[in-house]
Image 1 (cartoon, rainbow, N blue to C red):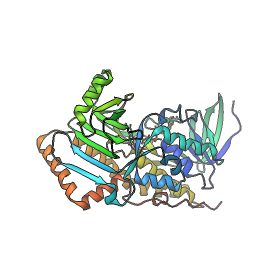
Image 2: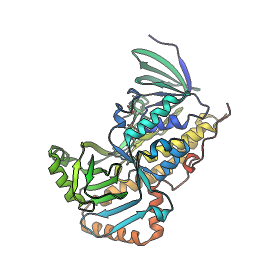
Image 3: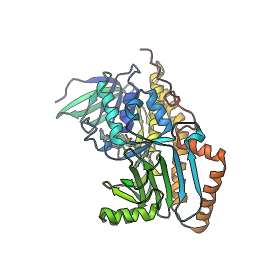
Image 4: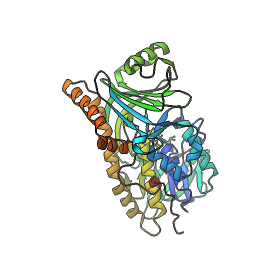
Length: 410
Ligand SMILES: Cc1cc2nc3c(=O)[nH]c(=O)nc-3n(C[C@H](O)[C@H](O)[C@H](O)COP(=O)(O)OP(=O)(O)OC[C@H]3O[C@@H](n4cnc5c(N)ncnc54)[C@H](O)[C@@H]3O)c2cc1C
């Protein structure tokens, strides 16, 4: 049975970090926004908003601040004041410090659950966003002046006509497949084991990025004296590490990380994510634009995935709000042209880190030790590295510069 057709200016498919952030960014745009999400709208039960953490760059803080969401997050996340980069078994360390960059913190560590709660709270308060959750898109057809959708909600089929569709349904995007947009995929043959640990010594707001011959290992400062651990290992080693009891696992982790934080005491649940660079072959097709993991899922080595997505979302929201009478195709072409450079820079950066630092070929190991040492001694190089990590390089959107959105003329 078909219920009465609805209309909206922007339909977002997927209410994960990227889709929910875009819906919030558009709240004062004057556009009628709809969001279709496969899971119920509760951050407590939504699998994207679990115990994982994301390292938010300083640039992401600026965007959330301009969206008015920062105060609700600020007390529940931990600041990264120093980033300590080292290479296990080799000399050479680089330290990036917040004071050198003149900022309160280089970044922040947030639990996905906390971000989910803040974003969803804003969405339910927002009258301009029609929420359809849980719901599934059944079909989608592009026309000259709109996209026609059929979706299922509460056991009923509905139709919806949207001026623009934003696809944000994650790395295995069913909508991208429905549109027959392909992906390029580079499998790293690595997986990330994610967990939280309580170390014997205070983390002092230092994020440790330690490169090892089997892959990078990050310890990120969290609230309650915990550290969020992202341990990248060859996929063949995952089963053995998961099968260990907590004590044996902590011992193995301690061997890899060392004693910079004293003895590791307690470990939380372990979760595994296979790692690949997955890129959509197109970001824009007609009146459809693809964002977040559906557009590009990258290795978590430098904690850039969501930060990149949030910069995409901030610019898209700005261009849509300022669009007025310009054809949507022109707006989307501008969006794609403006965002491609940043995305390419992030892919190159993370991909190079993974390849150069997951390799114990001796000349490469010496070169990397020298590079870490030299970087530490060269303020200009460190500054560039810090700006990149903070998400402040390249062209920034209005939200990225801390400015609120300009409401479109309606
Ligand atoms: C191990 C690991 C560590 C990471 N660490 C960091 C970090 O430190 N910093 C950082 O910036 N990034 C990090 N990332 C990346 C970050 O997690 C992702 O960039 C981010 O979660 C992507 O969000 P998304 O909204 O695009 O996709 P998702 O989170 O996958 O959300 C997709 C949403 O779409 C919904 N959905 C799916 N299919 C449909 C459908 N057919 N219809 C409707 N809805 C649908 C899902 O229910 C979900 O809510 C990390 C990633 C991993 C794997």
